[in-house]
Image 1 (spheres, helix red, strand yellow):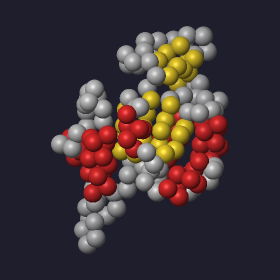
Image 2 (cartoon, rainbow, N blue to C red; image 1 turned 180 degrees about the vertical axis):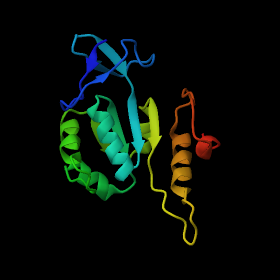
Image 3 (cartoon, rainbow, N blue to C red; image 1 turned 30 degrees about the vertical axis):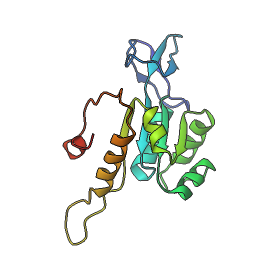
Length: 166
């Protein structure tokens, strides 16, 4: 089986020789020269979970668009300033931005329209006076994604929290 090396030269991860899905959007080349079609990902939220996830997916060769509503955060990321600290994150973001695999935007509609997979990674702070998470940001992201999804999209799976929104 061919091996895939993350774009930044990290460790190897075994991959299947068959395309991961039917519509080509990007190509990953293996050591043996074979090519496999990969998915374009959109990550909603550029905080601790979203930014790290987006950077890691990009480092594995996926084309990733990371969306956030905060224009200052997007501007900082586009200028190479990382708004959080995670050991080793800065060079991963920089190398994948330079390679064009990691893009930051405020434009959720275009990011969703061009994605094969959309991941929600928005904040879930504790509700005031309770021990439960405030899922209002998750619901809001789900509603925005539902409005932005092209008619041709097929909904495959969602957690029951956002299932009714899409």
